[in-house]
Length: 384
Image (cartoon, rainbow, N blue to C red):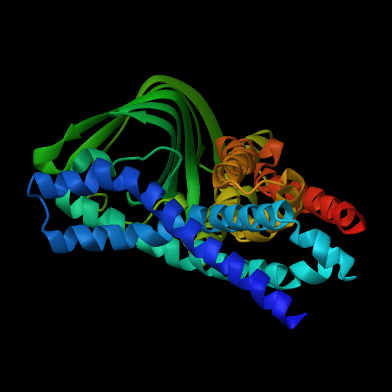
């Protein structure tokens, strides 16, 4: 039995390393051709900086490459075992399928731990370091202003959330004005906006069109509508630093938890006021939209960490059932399953500002589906 386990383990690890190298190269290729090589050709960076940039991108692509490589390796290995009638010989010896795949399941659980370390800590920090490197080389003021779907707190006294930013033309803008950098005293919702830049003075004015606002005035909540609400001037200096606060997708797990706690604390004082009346519900909905985006990122990072186990559970019986030795068949099946898995994640992120749909739970659906279907297929394969 030990010999059989060593044989299966060697095959899986060899295929895993090969698939990992291939997927890492493919996922890196887009970023390298788009940005890094351009820096080198335009003499914006030395060869050493290019190597550093590529090295910083590697952990970021491993977030996706590691589960894909594990799925591909089990499909190839167990498809080849089945095609070569090795499982027929194993069953004839009275050995169950579950006994054979035990070391593979242990490898997948180990990879889940590695994925958690990469997803929650290493990849976000490397991504931030890469963004800072890119900023120092090519970024201007426009790339630092109000990125889409990011909770921006780089401007003192304000919190911004922008649904879309098309070269300074904004859509679905939410602004929260703070008192003493802690308590929300005014909220502004605008379907449209525009950034007017004054680069020599390092300032901007934010024009909000068809804006609805609610503010606390003399102890009362006052609401109103303004066709053009100019906000500013805002100092660009905090936003133009290369080491500015990372966006939600580039935060570590601990940073995301701190961000969630910070946002809730900003609103806790305002929601505790007894005179809010009907405005309380609107403020609660705005808080839900802000915190929902953070929760989606927290759950996405954790859910990604279990992808290797789900892919392994479903990949083993599919490899046996396909009964093919060809590498291209295994890769095609792997890509199809990966597409299904990540479509749920993309859906959850697209609904990040729609808390009524519970998008932070949607990112968990592919794990539950793959693990349940994989367990059922394994049970049937073990009986067969």
